[in-house]
Length: 142
Image 1 (spheres, one colour):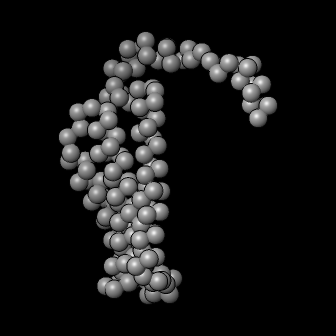
Image 2 (cartoon, helix red, strand yellow):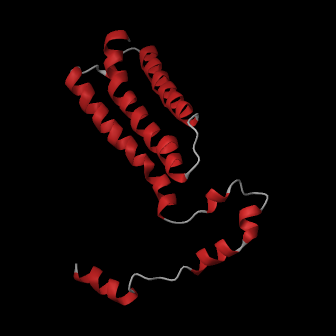
Image 3 (spheres, rainbow, N blue to C red):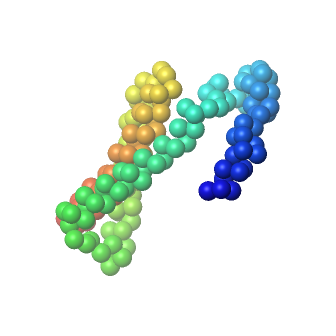
């Protein structure tokens, strides 16, 4: 703890970000041929939240696994025939693609709705379905 406090006092946690100022002042970066939108160059907390939406996959997987283990005991994935394992994998991939495709149809005019409907909810719901519902259905149908 002392080392962290000492380093905090040395640098005062205020490092100048000259490269950020240069990038934002250079309009060629925002309008160049390789740029798609101005949101690609946003720097700040709201942009980093887009990258952290994958955390919702872990939350959905945790709830999904706990749901599956309270519903069924074990489906013994490794002891089933190969075609059943491939079928379960394709069902899981289909659920992921379908969930993200459905949520991409929701209109997103601002950055917050883009975060929630394009990133957070699809990660949460698809991972819950894949880790919670698919094993239960696989136990009885595959």
